[in-house]
Image 1 (cartoon, rainbow, N blue to C red):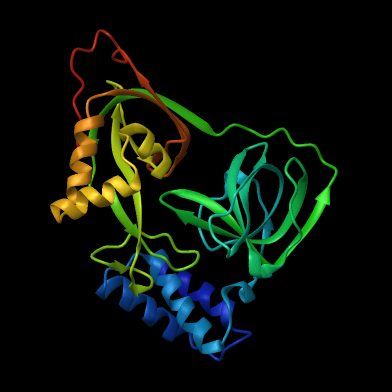
Image 2: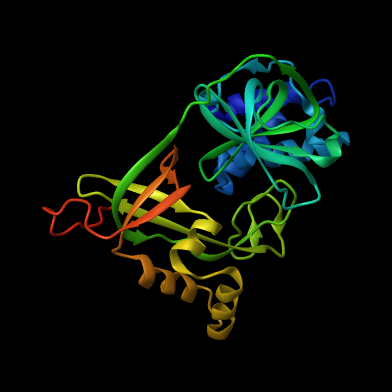
Length: 309
């Protein structure tokens, strides 16, 4: 069975209690998006699900599956899965949107994962340091980093278990040898729950949108033996370059070109040595901590060259 057929079967099972839909129709919609319009399968699946959600007059939270299973955080490896977790609330952050009730970090013996609880779900408030069994949470993925979302169907039970939270971070020392396309001043989709980077003012999921400015660097770190693609988020990018969002917008406006921001960042950081720490998700090391090094990683290496990615 192909990936498209598997996705079509899963969507059909999701909606079979809500709509009279044909499996062949689901498969045809996915096939058209993937084959004709070259949409990634994960995005095509979300688009088809949104079509049927609109047709059924449902919210995504209404589709809680009965097949959720208890997993460890390290086992979360794909989006749009309904799962259960037993985890400790490691840290709570200040929500950036009124739509978010709580946001923070969950942890178990295998590592940590971000969680978001929507304000409209009216859920029990989680307390930092407490351990909970969370049933009916949905996995999500953004730039290789997985997270979970709590929704109105999520069942929260505080438990007495003690958890020693594992460390899933990796550290790499190396020279930043390349700044990739998609770095600098970017725009993200403003639709709640979607943070996709816009391409020519268009979100692959929600079409033409206004977009919200953000900063990032997608780079390549080379330690003389291997290379690793690294993503620096808004906070890390600002710390590395000294360029904040308002400065970046002014630079782009003056030049009538957003690429000048990435060019300026490249001049600032390219060829410098850094120690980067964070989780590795897919092909990317996601920078949570960055330290600039004063010397090359290996003094015997007189030249570190970027490999072809």
